[in-house]
Image (cartoon, rainbow, N blue to C red; front, side):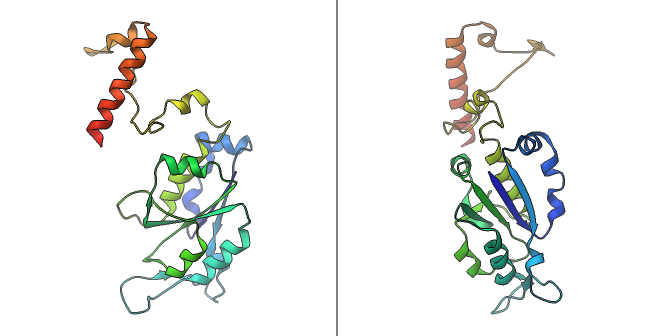
Amino acid sequence: MKISILTLFPNFFSEFTKESIIKRAIEKGIVDIEIINFRDYSKSSNNQVDDTPYGGGAGMVLMCQPIFDCIESIKTENSTVIMLTPDGKTYNQKIAKELSLKKHIILLCGHYEGFDERIKTIVDYEISIGNFILTGGEIPAMVIADSVIRLLEGVINKESLEVESFNDDLYDYPVYTKPAVYKGLKVPEVLLSGDHKKIAEYRKQEQLKKSKINK
């Protein structure tokens, strides 16, 4: 898979590709991540990428030209273009799984007051990571890239993926490790029993309980 991240602030991603699971996925050749500053595609003498909104109002709006030209220069028939915007569809694990099947994802990071509405005509998805406002789309881009990459074959142990949260629309069950008692706090006896059927039943019940409380 290839992931292209279009941003005005490429330094946001300087460490993202150099740590942990993302780094290993790149080293294994499972994913290729490229960071593109779409300011480089501006045709203005001062590399301008934004301007004041028609009709008045606060803030600056990202212009069509640099973004259209940038996307058109890298897009292929296998590309999926995603605009990261507060009014997009709320991101979830189901969407992550859909995106993990794509060959090339283009993540477009917004900034300032937002995008010229006409830019939406060249994107396939409009995605939000939640009902709150961030400075720009860089953090959402990292969230999406991370959640998709870990689903790619060879990145994470298959068994680990199968038991993760949200695979069956439930939160994960609580987990414990040694020691069995710490400061008077005990690990549930069922987990020490060696009875795998009872352990599975306990974990399922805990998933249902946690999911009901948190939804």
